[in-house]
Image (cartoon, rainbow, N blue to C red; front, side, top):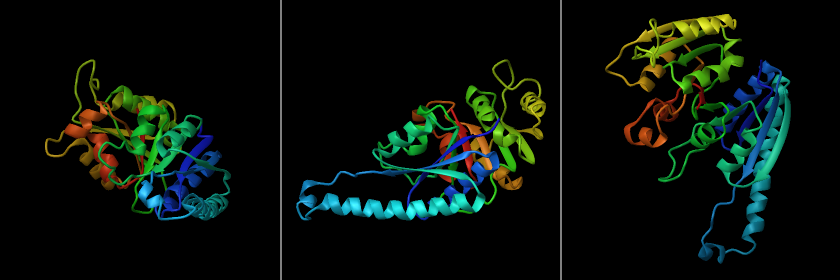
Length: 274
């Protein structure tokens, strides 16, 4: 079992190089196919601004073409450095809808961490996590990540979303040196974690050949997202795996939650599934 189609959203922003590198190394590791998707968006422009410029559409297309050429050169260099097969896709359209369309035909999608979005605007990560049905790896906009998936921290809460995330991450977990499964403030009972929180999922992973250890932590001082990031730093983890939006996105926006916290404050790449 391995990722055979790895989609990465690319552009000519400085932060793109790191997520492109993560995706290229993942493709090489899985002997998979790297798909670099460049989306040319067309922001609405007020008529009074358009009236001040002649051939504004031609100028914008020229800028887009120049940016695409720069980005493609970066893609070819990244894929060539690790010997991964690569496919270049240069399309126009709405960013979220276009990436979502292509993501449905890939095993995993790699995107960059978003800056704070405008009020009422849905971040790209939310669209992909909630609408596509495939795992998404979000790479922080700051930092260097030469390895991803060698030491993995799994945030486990016994939910459907966490179960899906662990299954979606199996191609990475199988090759990891160590997988640390952590349950934060676990609940007992049939709808909870069982007698020993985390033990059942670790046993399941070990039967797949994953080197997994488990622990559970009670903490009233930190929320789950803070605890996961703190533990990731302690364990020198290079990837966090977790289920996303176990409660509704609106509830997380209003009350906060682990998904929202990690999307805002991540320090290592995070694989999310819903």
